Image (cartoon, rainbow, N blue to C red; front, side):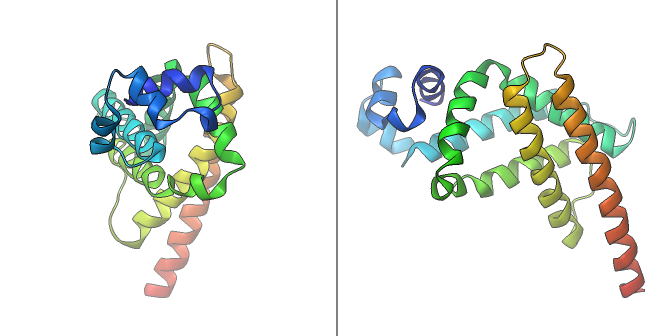
Length: 186
């Protein structure tokens, strides 16, 4: 069903793709589709989870390089994994851009995906700082994702530059926040 939804989204406006279309394209009964998903947002969340799993399976575990470099690699691996679905994701993003209510249904799974990307990179994810790291990476990823959707170069130079800049700015901001917290808590 997830693949069928993305195949349909690659050639149709996401708003025009119905659950019945997805079930038919996946050779499922609508009742079978309903047993797994309550709406199209559930299908998108399932796609995010599949991408998470594939990225984490490919992630280089260990402590080589800085956490920032490992986060960069994990996010770029995410874009690589999503590459075959770019036309569909572009149409879905375009549809959701004008529908914040529907887009907000993906906010928690998007933050969870970034939590897993940070975990895959070996970032510290304890205490309040974890929430700050997840929120920061979610903002950085969102901006890089928008660039990635339009970046048709094989090397993804614009995407990498946006991600690199975002991670550098985020790292500096996080260091300032941690210093302030240490001063207050010390």
